[in-house]
Image (cartoon, rainbow, N blue to C red; front, side):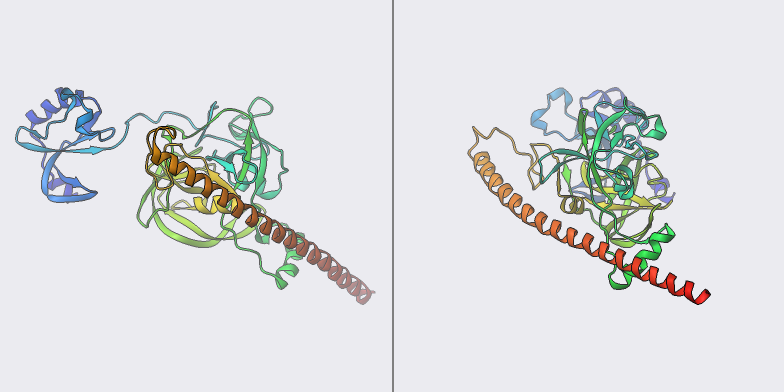
Length: 405
């Protein structure tokens, strides 16, 4: 409140000039009605007060016509140009039917209620294009079958077979539960857990192969440019089926704790904790979480004040997929211009990329083989303990019956 009082409003004649002249310039989409400190190199210079002019994006003066150049000074007041993107009303309803598919809309398994559609990935093993969702949205916490239909919109939002089918479940990362809701399974698993603890989870993710057209963009927000690892305090946003567009901030990059599912309780680690009242609600599961136009992960759980997010790097590594990005973005986030054929630097970079891709593929194949062997051994171990648990239970029942008789 004090800051608001101390801010000095720009004179009426200056504001009239801005509305009549400056707002009509190409790329300009607003201004501040009070004098603001200059922003330079991401830092706020409080000693220098300016008229802040908002634009969709900053463009070098050399690329602008003389008529569209924002004056550096207006009636004795210096100007400061700040880019805020395109301003438009967010009127799209995520619960409606969209073709092509985009992230942020309603979608889930045909036997689920309602969830949100995630981003597109390329399967590291098959090369297939896959769309991501949480395991509990696309694979029913592991109870679904590969090939099951996915609907958009979700069944709760009037989606139904066959008209709204958009793909089939392709694969999912199993969720390791420490406790099960089913009393019989809980009893059996306690024998197993006596000898071996449940593996920690890092992601709640599944993938389906789309059967309709899709776009690698978020509803009302446009295309994504890449991925990143955020920092504490960074502002994040998401678009989801229930709460649409919301914003929050990074509270923790190393969250670990228990998540309650319908099938039971699972322990997760290495997740992002986002702080923000109403950042997510039921039905927002699978929403991509963004820092600007960079993806940081996918939300899967939360409370009224905090949301838990799977990290994008963990989704790629454990899910054996790669986020599909625009061709103009390099691994360092630098836009590269010019074709491969007419730019020697591009030719060299292309060659290096191909070599790196081949090495990554070999590494992923070896890692995938080792993980497959480990998973099979784990499953075999579980079966052995299940059998052993059954035998022990049978013996206990027989002893009890003899004692009673």
